[in-house]
Structures are given as C-alpha cells and as structure tokens.
Length: 155
Image (cartoon, rainbow, N blue to C red; front, side):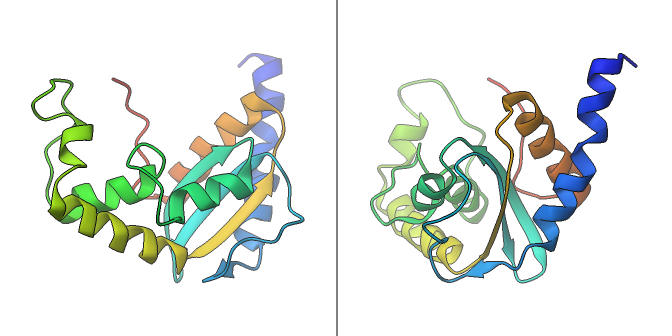
C-alpha cells in the first residue's frame, strides 16, 4: 500500500471512535459552537442509520430536518420515503424523475414525516477539515456501522 494512503487510513479509526463516543444530541438542534467541517451520524436510539459529510455541519443538519427542505436537500429523508413508499430506483426521464415523484401528495406527506423523524434522532459529529480524510472517514464509518441508508453508488 502506498505510504501516503496508509497514513490517511491509519488516522480514520481514532476519529471514528470520537464520533461514536460522543454524547448524542437528540430532539434538539446541534449547538451553535461546533466544528464547521466533518462527518455526522444519525441514529435511531442505538441503531446507526446514516453517515454524511459536510463543510457546514450545522447547516447540513437543518437541511436534513427543516420542514421547508426540498427532496434534493434532505437526502436521508428522501431515502426513508423511498423505502416507505417502495419507490423504484431513480429515473432520469422527465416522466418519473425524482422531481416528479417528489411532487405527489403521498410523497409530500411521507417526506414531512421522515424529516420530523430525523429531527428526533440522535445526532453526532466529529471534525475533519481535510476533504480526502473526510470522504474516507464517511465511508469507513458507514462500512463499520453498517448504516442501511448510505449508498455510494453513482449515476
């Protein structure tokens, strides 16, 4: 293994331990004084569900949870709705695009419920400003925690 990559990988587990060892914020917004960049974890009780990364951690929390967030801003909520409504994989045709699916009354109601559910979840975060380590740490945490709503597929 390349030494530069090895150094990056060896630094992941201590950050992961910080993440899972943090006392979670539950049912309340994260504190105003928190790291700007890093990764975050949403859990339902002790069950880890979703790991993400952001260069604006606090703002990203609100995009996942705020009532006015759109389907393309609250990716975790979208995944919860897709599961609940048994939606087919995303299509890139105008007829059944994410935008069209997100405009149905059934989706709108379920989406509001999903964001409310996420607001009540445990929320943890750990600072990581380096973009490469941030990406690797997100993947590492999702793999180790087996978060069911992370998907690293591309389109």
